[in-house]
Length: 533
Image (cartoon, rainbow, N blue to C red; front, side, top):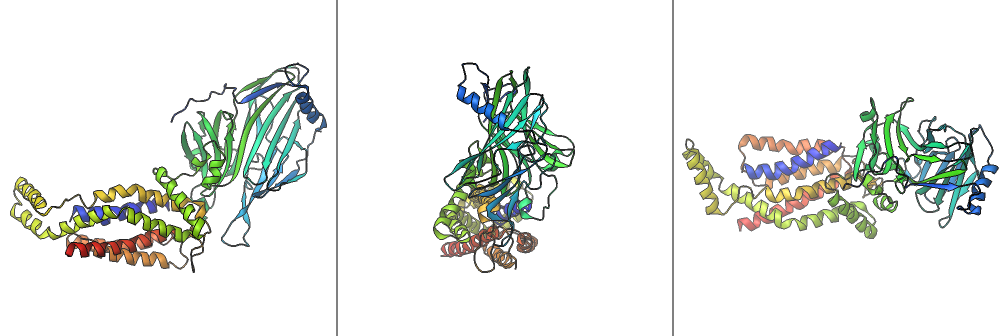
């Protein structure tokens, strides 16, 4: 759908304006040996560490018992209900309270991570260099947690290995937020050094139903080396991909929702994307390497985010997570467009009206340019008979023909490029608004009026795209043209082609295009009146 929409935008701008006019950070990479994210503590009797801290760690180890049966722990706050599994101390499923699967209050809430690989649930932990399985069974310190808006609570999972080390995973929750802090700690109670790294794993289905608009864009993404990298599942079907430069976060996401692991003080050294042996899409984030002496502990911090790709929420998480909302080449313009939509919605509580207001504002801002463009096109249309006469007169002398035509332009004060150059300036704005409307979760299930109950879905009765096609036809008829008869017939078919292209586009995008066409028709009538007068 995205490619067809881009083609529609390009063709509309190029054909209706250009064709008519012409023819009538890079940061320092983090090495896997960089231990700035690794905190090492003495948990024995050495005086450099407080006795209180040592006792705290040891008491947790003593209270934890070996277990072979996985259990679930439910955590609920204002935003979600999460089910954690003691297998891998992972997240089994997280259900978002504020979002439904379909546009109905009775529809189930959106559930994320629920289709993960059962042998490696999301955010399970593996050991590199020491034997820690992603299916290791931890012992939770509570059976459930429920947080009010102002509360902050923790969930601690403890795994005691028979070879002499202990792993503790501590999740910290905020009662009113989506972000979850994760502290992963290993205590070495053996008689020898333990060297290696932790791996945090996110898994998801490799193939999804693309008929669901939510999965139009689906795959792995991460922010590395000061840039966004996105990989479709097909990109790793035969070979894995690895990133290891200044990684801020790694995620599996779709068009509207994101499940991400965030770096805290360079705590992600590398990320590998692959199709695992069970056929699932897998993102493996590896920490910097560490070495833990007997009686010592190593602690590494991360943050998790499982929630909506809403720009303000993403930005509040830090680690450049807002970059996961990919708004294309002109994101520097698309983001202000998105903020403008949210601003107007705050006062009128209707995103459809907000789209109309922004369309009107853009039309006003660009009125001087379009006025100049249409005036130039009208002038070119008026001198067309004289141009044809010159071409006929000098058909065998191109140099004389060009000089005569340039003299004609000067005499009538017209510019052959005057019709398209002003419109080229507007192309970035059109693309930016297209992206803002196409990928903003704010429009998901947002009603307009009457039969349009979801601005992110197609018009169920195809009324708006058909009306849009009619307005394109009238706009075309009003646009000054220097085309011959055959070219004009081809142009007459474009409104029909565009109508069929827009039938399945999100109604919010069609609404913008329809309103823009209506305003353009009014503008052309006004400019034609001025030129004729």
